[in-house]
Length: 112
Length: 114
Image 1 (cartoon, each protein chain N blue to C red):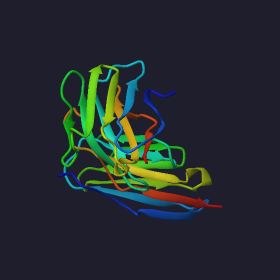
Image 2: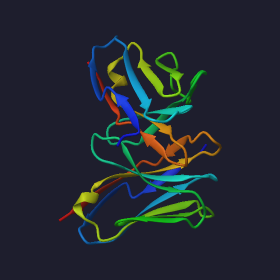
Image 3: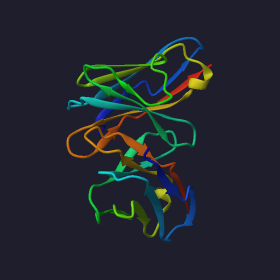
Image 4: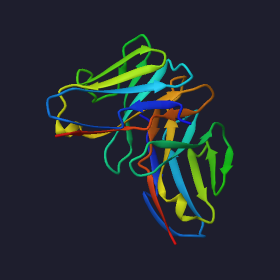
């Protein structure tokens, strides 16, 4: 059974600071996703990581994937208040079905 | 704009009634859609995989007679919560894959059963 562990679950940080969210998973996977969710809203796709060593960046967010360590990171650079949200990583169990197992999510609060 | 449309966004119903939630892929065909459930401040749990033209595949612990899934066309999957009870109150989200590697999620449906 695929398990996805995300940490920290809660993160409170000041504007301008940097931090990293970690996502570990238990079995080999083809695809790893990062999503953002605002309260009461659905999921916004941030990144799709497909191969070992993949690194993707969008604005102040950068995601990376190490398939050998079964670890993905989401790095936040110079945080701003607008980044406050819950961030989920999700791992595909393989094959062509795109069936995702989600981490528990990281509630990020960026304080002025 | 949205590529997956989910309706309704919010529904309140009485205990014992049935509620249908629709998930539509816009401008693309989705042979497979997924239904998730999310309790407040928790993660998403996959309920079932909806396959066009065939029976849905349910995850362990999900009652298929309780949560009826119909994927009658390449752009529409429906989830019907039958004989709803307060414990069925939750946020339900569908997703569909549109070419490439991205999955797109619907806007979600907040179900409240009184």
